[in-house]
Length: 176
Image 1 (cartoon, rainbow, N blue to C red):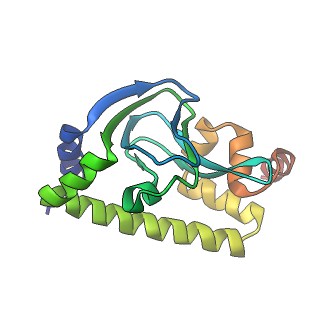
Image 2 (image 1 turned 90 degrees about the vertical axis):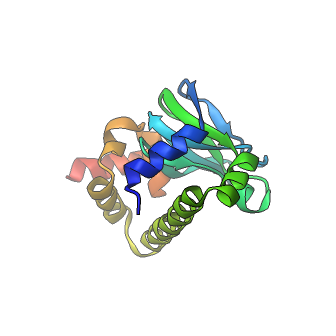
Image 3 (image 1 turned 30 degrees about the vertical axis):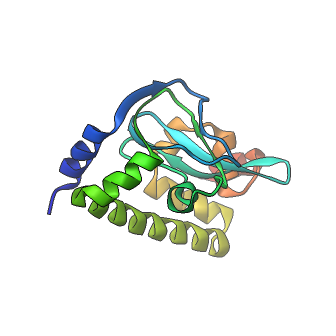
């Protein structure tokens, strides 16, 4: 079995290298996503509109893949937007080409299934945390598991991710 680094390198060979500035929308909420991205350098966030507010769902950094899974799997419109929060260097492939590569190349198919499984576990963990944990517990968990978020992401995005206001986040941070 290939190492993670070997798998990524082989995937990058079939993707196109691209650069985008901060605040670039890679996927618009409510549109069918056209590409899948691998982040070589930089950061992005996944967010959606809810009751007039932007709710951040996920942050992605170097080594992460960005895609609208619903667009890849079923061709549905994306349930969320994906936006860069730092200048990024990405590798991209169209969803149509990626689907062909999954069928043609066993290493791509194997990597895709591993990625889907890891994503499912990650989303389930986040969902349970949102239900079971207090905002302060969610903040501490985020610090433990993703310390780069504090260094690289604006506070209002972090507050949105935790499901609290920026003022509440400031209070939690001051109690540390």
